[in-house]
Length: 505
Ligand code: ZN
View 1: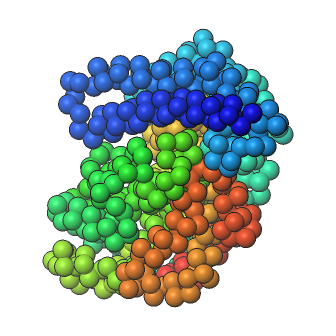
View 2: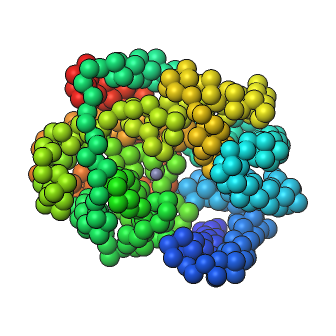
């Protein structure tokens, strides 16, 4: 029995390694495609990636995989598995079931539909033409409804989609979360708007040499404990992180000569994602557990570094001097305190990705409410522009002048990623909840930031979160780290305290 179990385990992990290697190759090819592959090679490259993905897909849904999973799921075998094998089986089972329950023909049609829809969405957005995108979006919603029937659902149909990105998350929990956010953030935004004090932030839009921006970004990543022997920083149109394995986690940013903070904040954001992936325990290398445990928890780390550290007073008390040295002309009359207030200016805006910390979650709430209603048949795709604008007016007091700046602004729906948006707000909530705990456990937390000892914070996060990879599910991690379930109260407390001080409310 033990001999057989060991043979089966070896074979199973060998199969996983083959899948992993395809995925590693795909990740490098994708990174290259996005960072500077010659334009004329793009078509051929897309074919290569498509072929490798199909091979990896075949292996994860193969009969061989099915046989291993059936074997490990038997009660007497399952009870003998170590924690890593058990969690690996759980993750492979999820993938296997997800794809096996959908007929192959249907899956292929959907892949084609979404890739066409993505390129069509770009045109629709550029030309402010919702009608062009509408039939595609209708089909995508329709396919998702069919998938939900095939995958099955408990309670609300939308739960099945949420679970793809945040295992265990439900409409019931999210409704309660957003209702708390709505009741406290909407009035906070209103008070901020009425405040007689408004930070001056024009100076952030002077000319800032991008070589120097890069120098500063590299310096901060290094201070955070990002390992440049296990990564690199490049420039792309849209910043992203690619984790190939913990020894190779690459980040990108974008430099705007007239916007100093965009590159600084995106470097810290992607740096947070990267710290998570660089510090996963070596025990998990090569398994599907060598990844962040959910989209929400991953996002909690990018936002922890970007917002909670990177937009804090203590951080700039330490590092503003470095920035002034790089840009003496532009920043000579600006104090560190004025700088801190400027980078935290709150302004209800139309575009999610440009939103500040306070209004950001209202943008997500709008998308959540719309997705939930669409999936439950309470609204139709044709209603989206109208519903979008009504909600923008209600929560943010701003109505988009066109669909380009409204319902067409995000790429997610064109790729079929329904259920993804809430991850961003969950990330903000987790980050504030973790912040509440870390301040208690490292008692001179602000002083540590002021002294620039950021790696102490990285080490704490590694011990509590990063090293576990996907071995633990998000709810288990949050419970283990903070001693309670997800609690949006910490986020609103954090926002209220911070912004009452800045806006003198
Ligand atoms: Zn992110």
